[in-house]
Structures are given as structure tokens and as C-alpha cells.
Length: 242
Ligand SMILES: [Zn+2]
Image (cartoon, rainbow, N blue to C red; front, side, top):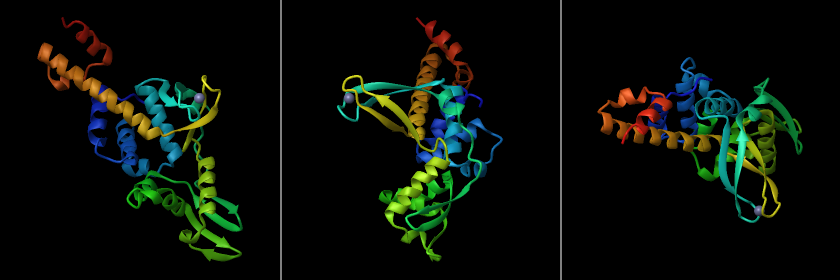
């Protein structure tokens, strides 16, 4: 994966700022993978999308993700670190898109979720996003040989289906193992890839634009000229300002 240049980071942030998360993810990938069509990117499974986003983050910002979280038992803050190469080392894209599963007497034929599904699900009732996604995943469902409409499937069946989808689409959901030094509590924190990476892109874009203001003011250079500089060169000129 090629790193996003400073001008790309600013352009991705500017384009994605007013858009929902599923769309921000595609804006960033489209910039990093100009050979892919929007349709190609939108039909990646969520796990495949996340694998590409993590590779892009590693190339652009670096290999280690860090964040502050609060212990889910005692509330004590702790910093977690996760190396992206560890997440990607064992990753392989799902070998197939459609699967069968039997849950509580129901026979389900289902498929993995894509950004197109997320786009549709977030347009509806926010409290029904998970249910909408699970219903969309069902290609056909039967019980005792009789067809069942996805909307008529009971909640526990759709929940079990959600877990099966996550198992078959590696990296669709990221669980980071954490241990609290203060109380000894051990748990898995889920890492939402797109909001996490978007916050980093936003911070990076704002820093770059602040540098543009400072350098333009000090040297009279244009925005375009400053955005073309590497971070190292920008920093050199910033340090030279007295
Ligand atoms: Zn704790």
C-alpha cells in the first residue's frame, strides 16, 4: 500500500469530513488505490476493507496504533498499543462470499457484508442497523423445509448469524486484548477501525494545514508548494523560523 502524501491527507479529510463513516473509508481507499473503481471498493467485504485501511494507516502514519481507553471494570485509564503488522500477518481474504449455517432449527444461506450494505443500513432507523445488516446478509432462510422471510427471523437467530459473519470475515471486527494494571481486569476491547483512523486523519490534516499557515506567513510560499513538501522538509523550514 502506498502512503498518502500530505496533499492527499488534506484532500481525503476535506472530502470525507461531512460524510458518514462507511463513505469516509471509501474516500481514503480511493485516494490510496487510484486503480480501483468506487464499485470495486464498495463491494469489498468489511474485513477486506479494514485490512486495506490498516495497511494504508501503516504506510501513512506508522506501524503502531495507540489509544487511551478506560478499564471496563474500575475506570482507570490505560494506554493500549497494537502493531498493525501483527493484525495483518495472519490475514487472508475470505475464500468465499456465501455460506450456510443451521441455527435453532433454521437453515440459512447468507453472504458477507460490504460497504454497500452499511450505506443502506445507516439510512434507516439507527436502533435497527444491526438487525437490518443481518437481514440483508440472508440470501434465503428455511425452517422445516418452509421458506422464512429474513424480517421474520427471531432476534437470537440474527445475533448468531452476526457472529458467524464476523468469524468468516477476518478483521471485520477487531478485538484488542487488554489488561488493567490497577485492578487486574482482563477483557477484549473492540476497536472500530474507521472512527479510529478517521480521527487520526483529521488530526494529521489539521496539523498539515497549521504548518501551511505558518510557512506561508513566514516565507510567502503557496499552499500547493507547501503541501508538496515531505513532512521532514516542512519540519526543517518550520524549525528555521525564528
Ligand atoms: Zn481496572
